[in-house]
Length: 190
Image (cartoon, rainbow, N blue to C red; front, side, top):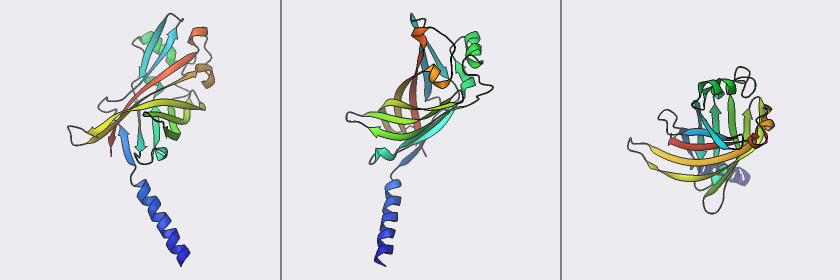
């Protein structure tokens, strides 16, 4: 009987601990979230772009951040570098090959807060049919009530990886082997 009572207390305490976590949907409808990227152009300047279509959400627990998680789905065909011909080239088989690989996805596997507010989010990123672990280095931006009666929380983060790690082998020159992804995520609490 004592073992059953102890098991019941453990189960209830795990439910109450997880009840503290808050679920958020990334606010893409209101365009309050962005996934941008930059890559060096011949080593002379930065080429910037973004993905216009993505969705996802995150779970965040202020009292136990290690239990927090993030999932983001990206439509690679929505790539936008403000140049139609370049975007067409990026969508083809030399780069994203969006007809063969129509989705990209990030699913976190760990969430760690460092002193000073820095966040390290490890997870599996799938791009161009390849899944690899990446680390997003981020920060809290803020949280609180919005003017429409909701509650919002925002983060920013960056990650850098080599294109060839995801099977993208088009030669852009040695200065353009790595790409930086820049995230600005605002979520609406559900």
